[in-house]
Length: 281
Image (cartoon, rainbow, N blue to C red; front, side, top):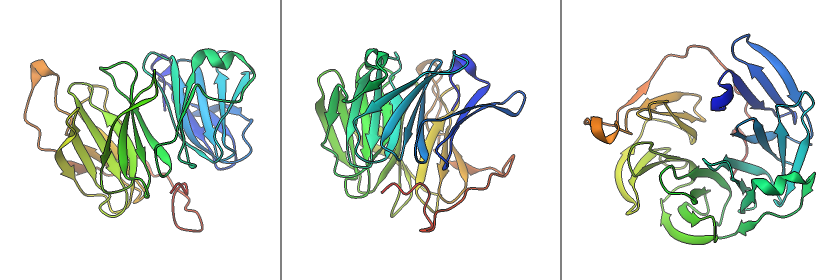
């Protein structure tokens, strides 16, 4: 995960409770950040501020402008923090937990060394909240996705905490991604189809369903031009999908074709004893 201000920097959360900072130019690890007591499964950048969520139910915030970054701790979850996402304006951090909580934290709350409660704690989801995505065209609009026992995408007014809409997708929601160019949203799923879905917002009419992965699709991201989506799944493949389209002034017809590319490098992903990645339900 690379912030725009430091595009040569990658943060890595490890199973050994560390957050590693790597320089992609020199291909070296430049820092090791500590403070968690268990694995670190979620990360989110806000400029030079890095937030990490761990299995210890803590969110830690590191200011990387400092040679010895101060740690600010947010306490509000009861189980693993499995989703983190900063709003585009950098004022609000959304966090999702394995206890089904969706918490909202204001940046101003992080002046204290320890903050013991979020501004809002939303409890409408019925399973773990891993998928989080802030809307790029409507301020304070957040989409969240629930796990296997929930299966919904929910839309929130993060100023008031009001639930605006809830859509049953029929399967575990693992990741969410808004289009940069159109009022559309992509979701990725687990059992039983392991598919991607493209939705029209706000009607939430399903535009297309995309299949190809053979295990749950854990992560989504998009190219800098906003036209291509990349999905990463527990089947250990990356797939590239031309589904987002071009900006309105350069519209073309896209077929939503998934392309499986040969790896540029091989990364070994260690499975847990249960054969799953991450253990989030």
